[in-house]
Each structure stands twice: as structure tokens, then as C-alpha cells.
Amino acid sequence: MTEHSAKVKQRAKEIAAEKWACKVKGIHIHRINSMYYEPDPRTLKTKNVCDIEYNDGRIERDGKEIVSSRYIGDALVHEWEKYNEL
Image 1 (cartoon, rainbow, N blue to C red):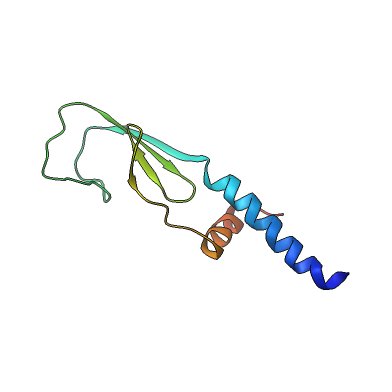
Image 2: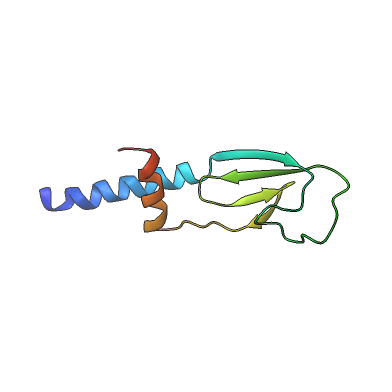
């Protein structure tokens, strides 16, 4: 029975990491064009935008995804382990 305990623990980490990935890491309201992920730095902003960064690295601006998830699979579990324990 113990031969499966490592697999069970790994799967539990994967599930916890997937839930953690959807949580907000930070919110940034700004009007600047110098963000490293700026989709069009040449366009001058005339109003504030709201950028929401999630734990998986995804960034949404005003409800639209502008940066895809940086962490998936084992990389996501590794990132989750930096901040959590099972």
C-alpha cells in the first residue's frame, strides 16, 4: 500500500496548486506604458487600467487576458511549493 503514497501525495499537491493558481497575487491600477508585459507600449493611455496578476503568472487587464499562465504542470507545483506545504 505504501508504494502509492508518493503518487497520492503528488496528486494532492497538483490539486492544491491548481486551486492556488487561480487566486489573485496582485492588483495594479495605473496609466503607464512601461510595464514589462505591456501589449502596445507605443499607445498613450488616456485612462487608468486595472491589471490583475494571478499566482500562475497570468495577467488580465480590464477583464481581458494579456499574459498567459507561466506555470503549468510540474512548474506550477514547484511554484506552489515555494509558498505552501501539504
